[in-house]
Image 1 (cartoon, rainbow, N blue to C red):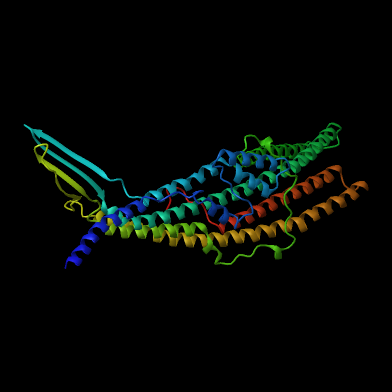
Image 2: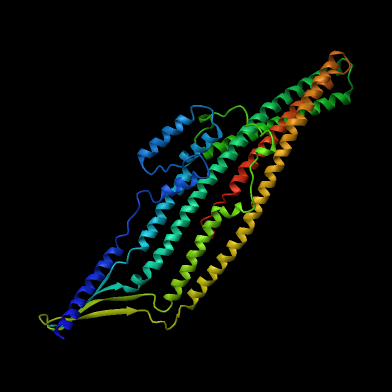
Length: 463
């Protein structure tokens, strides 16, 4: 019996020590060296060739600036433009700090709240009443594992969101690059149309003054010239707007900081080289994965809400009380406190959690339907825009060129007027410009298709 008593006493001594060690370990959650940015790098490079870099220190910021300067020394390719944006875009660099915020929440969830201390001091004619209490939220110890698991899913969702923002910036930069280059080419060809229309109008004006041209024909040529001038002015303005949009995405201060090549990439020779997309590819979308993570976190939160609906604060700790003279011994004991479910039984918080969860489940289902439709629509746009651009390249532009060559021979034989020849020259240039626009639409459709297989970034207030 004495041995059993000794073991029980030893257990009572060890148990508080074990509890203290558990509390100390619970407070040792630490931060990772890069806030999980390595996952961002690895995942994004499975979708794109370029590498995002977080300028989280002055050394890395300087390295980024040097790499951007080196890339800007030559005319930018599309890949180089995307790399500059991933290195230099200030909003993306700001988004990277969301990782640290989410990790801080995760670390905080793994740490117990600080203990509390309260003291009552009263004195009357030499009699004292002193109460000293140290309390700890014991309920937090039991709910901490589930709360930490919830924050882990929230942290994973934040990583997913940052990945989507990196890929979305790459997508926006590709589109801005295509638009800027196509706009510059259009300005080049529409300037030729404008010059041809001006020459035709000047010729018509001289022939009208000589009495060899009717007023109606003269007015018609002047109208063509005025329309061409308007189209050229619109193209120049569009070119400036596209250049400025690209400049912003690249994180540069001036349009003169970079140079673009002279022309867009070539159209694929045949449809056999086009991308193939299956109807199941939409399931890989990162926004769907993020919504699923959020839904799982809500499900766990619902379980936590139900578990703590009656007692959401349970504080326990040692206490000592002095009643009497100052030299009298303290009475030792413990203090326990919790909220009584008299007015609030926790039903409102449970109902709210249940409603949030069911709302999320239905939103995920709707998002999956929308994602499948977006992929199918993007793929159809991709194929159709290729066929249109191919029609211009293989048939319309060669036909216009052949017509111009034939009429050049007819003009040399004095079979047609110079106005007919100039009109054909104008039409031939316009057909090339139409091909440039069709090629631009195809390249944009290709970029949009790639992004439709990745997903769309979610707004901070969006589920």
